[in-house]
Amino acid sequence: MSDPGVITVLNAGSSSIKFGLYEPGVDGVLLYHGQIERLGGAAHLKVSDRSGKTVAEQSWPDGTLDHRRATAEFLELGRTLLAGRPVAAFGHRVVHGGVWFSQPTRVDAAVLARLATLVPLAPLHQPHNLAPIEVIAEAAPHLPQIACFDTAFHRSQPELAQEFGLPRALTDEGVRRYGFHGLSYDYIVARLRESEPDLAGQRLIIAHLGNGASLCAVQGGRSVASTMGFTAVDGLMMGTRTGTLDPGVLLYLMEEHGYDARRLEDLLYRQSGLLGVSGIASDMRTLRQSAEPAAAHAVALFVYRIVREIGSLAAAMSGVDVLVFTAGIGENDAATRAEVVQGCAWLGFALDPVRNGAGGGQRRINEAGARPVLVVPTDEERMIARYTSAALNQEGEQP
Image (cartoon, rainbow, N blue to C red; front, side, top):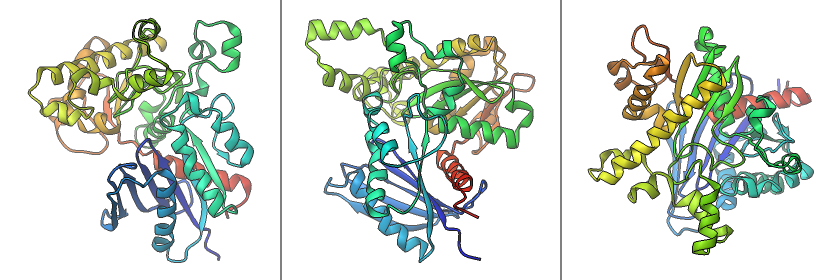
């Protein structure tokens, strides 16, 4: 029987490319994983096998490695790692699918052109998501590429949850709430169906807390409402992003301080959030270790916004049964979890401090008798691998 090939996943962020090589199938075994980080600066590559052993490492200190060059380097490395095994397909995380793409889609020239029109809606992510697709299309045009969208999970939301109070013509043009981090939320829901089936169909609020942060209300396994909207700057305060901001602030900055669109973009996406409020760092670990009052203030504002938005999402579902933490801060920062849950005591949540502070991986951390609170590590790359493998099966390209 011929080798069906390996599913290769690329998850391109604003300054990194995460990747994974998987056996095909819904439960495909992870062969290798790693990332090239600090693109545009002192770039560094590290690759590990399924046991966690480092199998490749390389640096580019000259600051010349961008997403296109990094993809080319990864393709060369992949040939070495696979040692002659074929690639069945490439799966990609694409942040924005607009109103057109609600499921994984095979990319051709027309799809790529349509996705490029969405760059203004996700300027920090969409161009970098598309760069690896373009490089691979040039290097290996015969290989299928499947785009998996962060917005797709939220297409199930009620129409009212997706609309702004704008003239109908603008809504019809596509100015609406899309929501993001959908691949992460999708994975969490799938993981709960496998491991906690009694909870999976209940009213969930999932807190994806990392450098980018959002919340999602999930009922019956489907997105009901989310904190991110038209762009990935909406909702919670984040590492360097403002989160929800009165649009009057933007008008004020334009009229009184001469801000133009590019300067506003830089303020909203790169200079605000934990970094802007603290004046110290965007990294929660650094702020937690700092003795500066400004660091504590930034953390307090971050937590306050989370607690306030949890209340909003609970209202959208007429209650909440389960709270789930995921992503870098959600999985690893026990203090943030404790502060958020303390703020949600009125919803019936309470933590067991020992469970909250101990261990890793998926676990329940709620106090006995309180509503369930879980930590569930997310795995966007595995979700992309599953979708890519399923897309090939649907097309009849994989046995």
